Length: 294
Image (cartoon, rainbow, N blue to C red; front, side, top):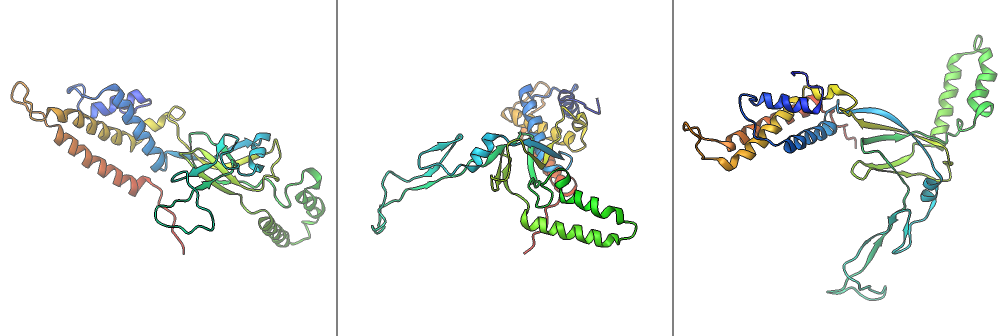
């Protein structure tokens, strides 16, 4: 099928591009699965169609608040599954009044708070966490200042200047930004932990965090991924490389009829194709990096 809609169909498509069923493609099924997994990982991390922006809603629990408010664990201690990180050269410790000479070492102990929440594996990037404690929007119902403005000012919109109203809202937004700036976060997709460097006295149990993030485009949910114009040739080139690597051990072996296998040439050709595809990826499908200012 020229338009694959599943993993197996993509693998069969790549084999046909390499000559199957006329030729026997000497690549094991396990190797084909590894090739597709590697191609998908590259697709997720580099292709603009490999991810999609989404908003996650996370409800704060009592355990999250306790871990966020807890001080760093004491030396050798542990809290919430997070142990102090220690870097030592040996067991000796130098007193403060002793000069450091040759052969002497000092122990250092590094500790870290457990102010993080666990993020699903399909999240590869996080932009921000929306404010949950706005200066003028944190109240509820009729006590919200926006409600009061609508209650007291909207009736006069027919006679008042809407520009003044817009300027007032802009001024209030500036005040809100000064008192409740964007939340400071740290995230690394390999650790899967979103660290919230905030005052943990602000969130309450049951509150929701709205996380602006990037999620991988799972082909099990969106079958069009299997037919992507980048993914198909990339998987084919990776499979050709694996085929050539498998056949390199037969280099110089002559088959009946005088045919000689040349796995090295097949491998080199595949590497050139991969270099071209990856360069095209950077120039065509990859989002450009943001300009650095300063």
